[in-house]
Image (cartoon, rainbow, N blue to C red; front, top):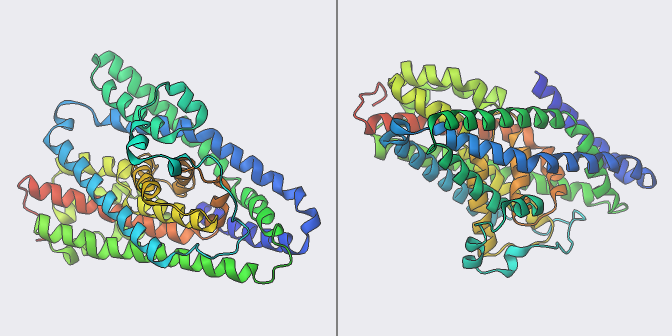
Length: 408
């Protein structure tokens, strides 16, 4: 109920921003400062959040059996399905091109789009930071993500007492950063009011602005929803059928309760107990598999979120009139994959993770204001896909371990 209330607040803020931007152009400066503060607050948490979430996630996988055969299978599944989801999203956003030709007052010369001037090899080379503190200062997201993965992995290689201490430390930092992030999100309606009012005011007098904006947002939603549909009802069922010998319809019926809960709450973490119960008791996966794969999946396996991040970043680039070539789109795919690993299983986590991708390809964070107004329904759908993918992964991995399931 609280999340729905926030959603309505954001919608009201969005509509009010358009009204102010069109009819009270001379007074828009009295609200734009709220958007500036909101964006500064988001920028403030991006780096510590992504650092702590990835280090914490990698370190918590552990050593020994956890990083053995089961761990490799689990992470391989998550990597493959997330990559497939991102590629499906990339195909749809390139076909539909929802942001191309949208006169939203956003077309401008974007500075510091470094990836446009570098070869793919140079880009890969610069992922390795010469000075990580310089990367923190400059906001070099790819370097920060690379360092975070390395740090998390080698935390598992030190003595146990240091391993536990460092893992607990980064877990604690992540929890604190999430508390701060949730606090900032409470001010999203005011932030969106300030951002959108300023954007609309720049095009005051253009009677086609509102219709164009609504039409393009509709195309953007269509791109996301079509891509999610294809991944959920074609890609994942094919994986179930051909890699696990599992009946997709029976598996879906067994997951009805957690899927409906995921759709209602927009939270894979809140749905986790129901998902574990259904996968273990209705699907027939052992507790050994469910207790490892599903909690890990709720943190690092975000197919729907990764897909959404890719489409959203491409839409914002198109709306700004920035043409992303092959190298830039590879960066989007790579960053969306890694950012989704650090996406918390809570409502509106995509608000933060999308800023990571925008920062990585040098796009202004103001573009978030365009998509947040329609984020609620997309959040519900992508969370459902996240949970559906987690359950499919647990079943396929259990079958590969020789277990007999109830959904054959």
